[in-house]
Image 1 (tube, protein in one colour):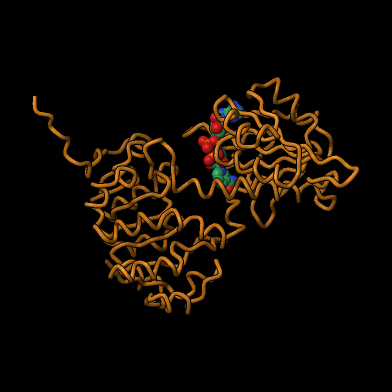
Image 2 (image 1 turned 135 degrees about the vertical axis):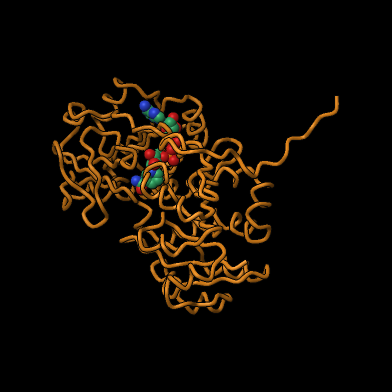
Length: 377
Ligand SMILES: NC(=O)c1ccc[n+]([C@@H]2O[C@H](COP(=O)([O-])OP(=O)(O)OC[C@H]3O[C@@H](n4cnc5c(N)ncnc54)[C@H](O)[C@@H]3O)[C@@H](O)[C@H]2O)c1
């Protein structure tokens, strides 16, 4: 198969869909990889590294799209990329179609085979191609929070780990999922005092076990949240109700009871945020102060760490890319249920139920599921 890797064109996006190690493995399997010049620069991979791995470097993104049977990207396609697609071409990337009816309709028109990272789902219900970004966001949130507590950002000048004779900061984490767990590990590792809240006791029990009881765990409810955050230096919002707006767990009134110069990092901002005072910010201008509290609400935290994020993302995506290249998408999906769930669009039809329902579009159900086994009576 000919696989294409264009340079991401979304503003500020420095990740790339494939690293030289991926190119090397595909070439060893007999495939050809077209990489747009400069595609890996933002993540620290030179054109020479791709060339040495066996890629064919091409000058323009048009050449990647024109030559490739499968295009591997990071972000959803933008306007200039859409006319470059052709019927039957495979696109493997984050799509987030449910959030964009216009993009969905345009891609339907192009009649591509669109497979979305975010809907690939393994049997326990988890999303293996979203997980790496949640891991990074969770870990980075503690570093961002530590920065917000610095005096120059309006913070109360508290060092997360404290010092000898000076107690460490108190970090409260709302949500003990992938993001919250990773924030917890880093905050604990730095030496902060950590409290974590979730509505699922089993999540708390897991974290309590792996940290050998070195954190305080609480079932999340309004009263406990209020009590815990009142004495916090840093509050990290990491809750998710799948498919829904994040619940507003911290009201303005509750925030007023925190000490001035404390900080909040709302990672759930991409789902609307779990603080009443949240508004989305960017890496260029990441913080603002409201009610005396420093807010950090960047919607794409992994974007600050493109090298780590690219490795983490491609570690997760590559096995699926190789399967599609080796077997063709039909057989690969037929044999891999998780990948089948990633199929969003095919032949001008919607294959993802949530997208079809959300936009009132016709839905083609699981076109590549294996024929069911007939058990003889
Ligand atoms: N800003 C960014 O750059 C960035 C990056 C990655 C993920 N995210 C976002 O972070 C959020 C969390 O993602 P995740 O992967 O950890 O999800 P997850 O499903 O693994 O975890 C969410 C947790 O929130 C808990 N929860 C739900 N309601 C709660 C409540 N009322 N109180 C306490 N806990 C509650 C759930 O039980 C679950 O354990 C999502 O909104 C995700 O989109 C943002």
